[in-house]
Picture 1: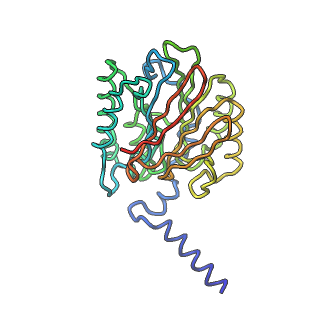
Picture 2 (picture 1 turned 90 degrees about the vertical axis):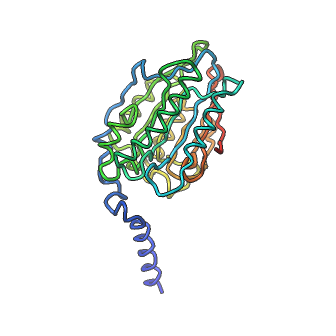
Picture 3 (picture 1 turned 120 degrees about the horizontal axis):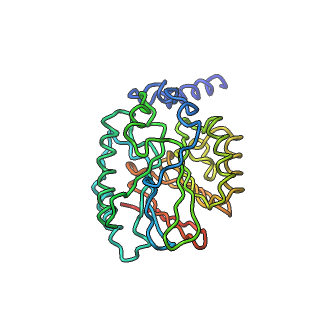
Length: 300
């Protein structure tokens, strides 16, 4: 009886690993690229790469994740762009997104053409934002996901996906505000930050006194969906401690293809459902005066 159970468990695990012959075992185990080679040190974005959040201390931005360009599924890009355009026209300017963030898996299998398709939608978002705010530097930021590594996809990602970095930050304050927020973008595409990025991030977050918003593809914990979170419990515990101790207000994540999260008291960790498979995104609103961050799940 026990032997039968073990055989069934083994076959189940093998079926999970081999569920997509498009990628194969090598790709699914994320061994095509090492996070320590990609993200050993933080890049601070230049002033040209920092979003214009306007003249109010209350502003919003959009988060979406897992668009999986190249996947064999019906796409709803036009519906998303229609929603985005309408959001930019709202009379309440605090709800008009000042920038957007994609939380990874931009491409489904790391192919160059998939990043081109991704950028075709991103460029339309940029055009809408530039027109809405009469500017020329609207931005859509990205974090790297595990699917972006498939088939040596990082070589394409770093050439085609703005801002062409996987571990970076910027700080921004409205012209009417006094309190800067710092936005950290982490590289968790291998399911871990790796030793070098983790050590560097621990120093970077400690040295930055601003309230912070963190972006990462893999959920750190988010209420304990263990199959979809970072697997190293020591790493998870350290990150949650850093977020708590050094003034994180919101941690935003993808990968799991559904909405879930956890309120730690001083900050929240929220996973957003898949852009492609759930037709959802998240509107994030920042209040510089109170240092509060609120989010709302959006269907498009």
